[in-house]
Amino acid sequence: MRTSPPFRADHVGSLLRPPALLRARETLTGDALREAEDEAIREVVRRQEEIGLQSATDGEFRRASWHMDFIYRLGGIGQATDEHITVRFHNEQGDIEFTPAALRVHERIRLNEPIFADDFTFLRDTVTSRGSGVVPKLTIPSPSMVHYRGGPAAIDPAVYPDVEEFWRDLSAAYAEQVRRIGALGCTYLQFDDTSLAYLNDPAQRAELSSRGDDAEHMHLRYIRQINAALAAKPAGMTITTHMCRGNFRSSWAASGGYDHVAEALFGELKVDGFFLEYDDERSGGFEPLRFVPPGKMVVLGLVTTKRGELESKDTLKRRIDEAAKFVDLDQICLSPQCGFSSTVEGNQLTADEQFAKLRLIVETAQEVWG
Image 1 (cartoon, one colour):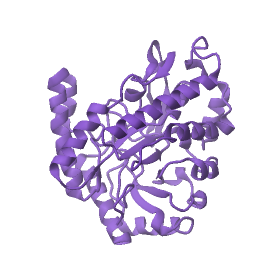
Image 2 (image 1 turned 180 degrees about the vertical axis):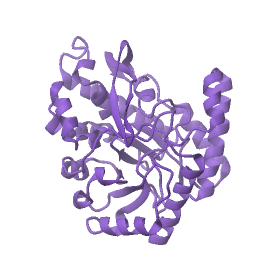
Image 3 (image 1 turned 180 degrees about the horizontal axis):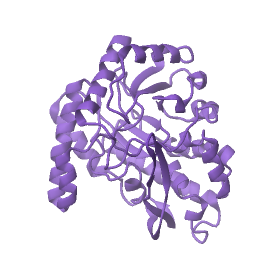
């Protein structure tokens, strides 16, 4: 078993909010709400440790959305009061829509203070107080998400007449976030990035092209900007990225294997590991993993978070063997394909089913890697 992240058995980050916490979010504010969140986080950290996971998150229990809660706190970015982003998700029953407030870049982008600093500090102290050796993991949206969600129309040309200045400021703000979170003791940071998976879908690229982006090469821009944000990462910090094709109330937004982005993504993105969605045929085959260089880890998201039915160990082991034809088995880890609750609403399964899936991942990893 690995002693540094990503671990053989790992998870993406978000977890189903307990019913008591959902009720608290509806009725409490301020310190009272934070106390309810604290209690729920202490318990979910205990459950992660009990299952045998080597890393623990706070389940993103303090957030309504995995990414917008972070993005709106970047200096220079605000919510549009009269406009919403519409993201269409699909499931077996039909389509649903996610409609957060649109974002506007109305000033130069900057980091006013480290985002989620208090959240991470509480998680760090909770884990430390238990003395289990579990590593606290923080998840934040990738800088790509700021652009992908808004596009050129979200950037005030009076603020950024030259788009290169927008990209420089965005990466600089993220670099400062990485530095300051590292100073708080974060050694395991994850950049969540749906855009690098969405770009494999021809329909998504067509949508980007229609708004004026160079969709065929957008992943190259995103890789450069993430690398700029990571150029001065603290020594001893592991940074991974997670890519999926949408996760909202057990629904998805895009399809397509990793082929369009694979060579540049795996060969050039300067992260330590890749969490990859691979729970159904929408993710394509394992062939793109041939571009993963030695030393980089691949965390196969073979266990779905969309449904409660438990996968079989034999099926998981068979798929790990298939992936090992294209990347060395020692570079592979196992996880769910996404979080269980990317937004506060959560996916359509129970907490018991969620923890059963995480336990399955731990047990399967132990049997595969010892």
